[in-house]
Image (cartoon, rainbow over all chains, first blue to last red; front, side, top):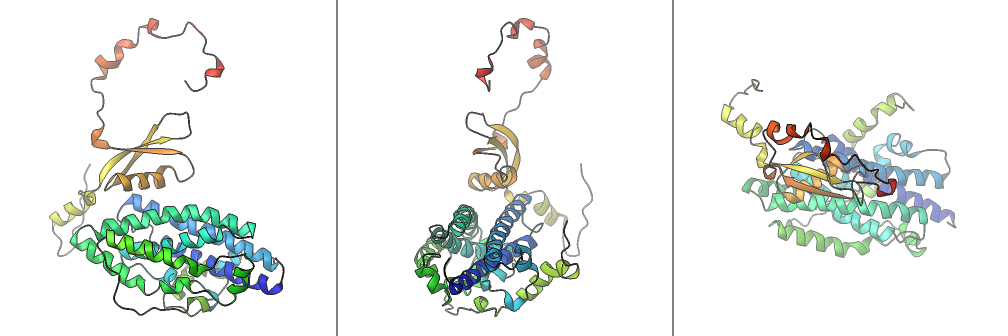
Length: 255
Length: 113
């Protein structure tokens, strides 16, 4: 780590991806006890915990670089909606199991590329976090893609609902590969990977999985963005309220 | 064991049956875990799943998420054939000490026997 500019940019990067994981983890946690079977409840909880773990590691590292004496808890619990820079996809609700699976599938296809790229970072701390997260994401992708295929190529009803899930989440997928300008210096320094480089592989995973699932990519070309600059959909506020209220009401409370 | 399930307006008893007893068409699988190389697979429980692939995933999440296994087997529960009639099968061994290899020491080096 050499310059102040790089340090600031790396903190932004770590917090941004920490936000992705903490918000997605919280969303998955909401679903526990609603899954179609007890076994699936366990799977969802397990994946939620993986995401929380990754968020914790990324936040803790950001806190260390900042040297502010904060910990991962502070980033999750004491920042406001506009401070969160997670991708919009992470905060999307799950009115249906197929929505949860579609959201997870796009995220897993993206994160497997992200972690694979970051695991060759020159920053050993970051490459270590990424190498572990890659193993988890590979399993998440196996879980979500097998559900996309099973539901898509299942009964008439499961097909319709899976397609609805894919349609609902599709417009939030381009944003995953947006790369803020501040990342450029980090890419040059070899600290992070070029996130956009994973787009081709992502598209290939999505295309082959949807084909096997007898599903189609939506014709609607509209793509939303704004999450990376703190401009969120209406879904993030209520999520944060539920996630943060305890720490806000009783700051520093612990088990 | 049975209990009265409350019926919502517009719902029939048949609706409830498909929902609660059909188990979404998922069958039961027995799970065997191999904790480490050199040990045998041990039965540890069961999971519901639609097919063998999801049964392996469910078993992994239910029984091996804390690193308890290096490998898993799942077997349809319907494929298990259990012993019956314990009296004739097992109880006749109670009084036959000559069947027990108690006359020599097993060296420690043998390990998992």
